[in-house]
Image (cartoon, rainbow, N blue to C red):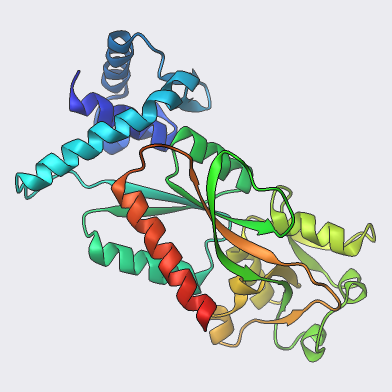
Length: 301
C-alpha cells in the first residue's frame, strides 16, 4: 500500500468524480482508476460506488474513511516534522446554502488562511440535502445550513449554532415595502417574490408564512447571493434570514435594505455541521474553531 493511493481515494471522494480527481492530480483517468482498483483489491473492499453521474464512497468506504484520514494526517505531520519545504497542501471544503453571509464567512476564511497558508479553502454552494450527503460521504469537511428553530436536528452530524436571527423581507430602498416599519404576509401576497428553490429552508418558511395564499414567485434561484442581486436590480423582494442581509456589501452600498415580518416570531439558526467521526482532519478542526470564535464576536455586538 502506498500513501499516494490513499491520497487518490481521498481526492475521488472529495470531488465525486474520477475524471475531476484525475484532472486535479494531473493523472490520466485510466491510471487513476487502476490505482484505486489496486487498493481495493489489496484491502478486499469496494471503496467506491461507480455510477454514470460520478463516484461516491461506498458504505464500506465510509467506514474506512476515518482511518484513511488518520494515515494522511500522520504523513502530513511526519513531513512537517522533517522540515519539508514543499509538502502537499491539503484542501478544506465547506458546503453552504448561504455563501453570502459576508459578515461571518469572509473574515473566517481570511483568518484561517493567515494561519494555514498552504491549505486551500473551497466554498461550494449547494442545497441542504446535498450538503448533508456530501458530509456523510466525506466530500465536504464542514457544512453551513439554515435551520428553523423547533425542527429536529439530524443525528448523523455534530451541529454547532453560529448565528441566531429572524426572517426578514429584503427589498430595494425605493420599494413601497421599504416605507413600512414591518411587512405583513398580506403585503407579500401582492409583491413579485424572488424565492429560494424547493429544498431550501427559506422556501419552506415562505409557504408556511403565506399559509396557502399562493405567493407570486416571479423568480426562483439557488441561494441568497443571487436573490439579493436580483432585489438590487428591482426584480422583486425576497425573504432571507437577517444575518444574510446585515453587513452585506449591497446593503452597505444602499442597494438593498430589509424589514421585519409583522407578528412573526420564527427564529432561523445558522448551523455549522460536520460528520460524526472519531478522526477529523486537523485543518477542518481549525476552521471549525475559527467559525465558532468569529460567530461569538458577531453575537456579542
